[in-house]
Image (cartoon, rainbow over all chains, first blue to last red; front, side, top):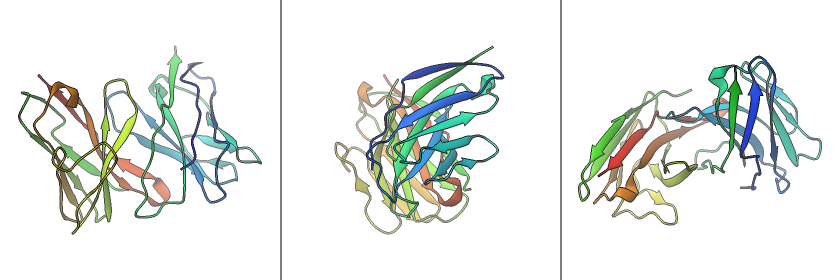
Length: 112
Length: 113
């Protein structure tokens, strides 16, 4: 799986957009970008994933650059409950034998 | 997506003893994954559990220390054997995936004293 680089921490004001960057310059053509988050003392939670097109769901938006070497997770209106560690993971498509390899992630703190 | 029930949620154990963690899934899954999260660290994969075959362990983890059972397609156990304080961690099971990614249990917070 390709290696990812994320800032160790970020702060965001409540109600503002949180933009979390991820660099994955060694990504392969068949690898997807996945985002998970882990709220303190809970199991990680899937947020979103994409291959090359921008994606949006009820939780977030994912913007992938045209060369696919970096991406940004956007939480459009951050709340205090979005305070968590956010993990960017690059890996091949879901197959029954594959697993997730977690990096260090970004600790996002949403401030009142 | 699948729903996972993981037990116990937490435990405090004496060194030298063993603890078995259970993971129950509400649907049949081929692969189940066990992770460890040491204090202040990210998640590290311990092993992948297939039903009907021996688990596949990652480098640094051995079957004698972390025996895994996978008796059917909805259940798995991880045992932490002969515990020491260094085993104090959160242990999580996970199943994948499809359109909703991987689902994780709520974790077992283990403290070894």
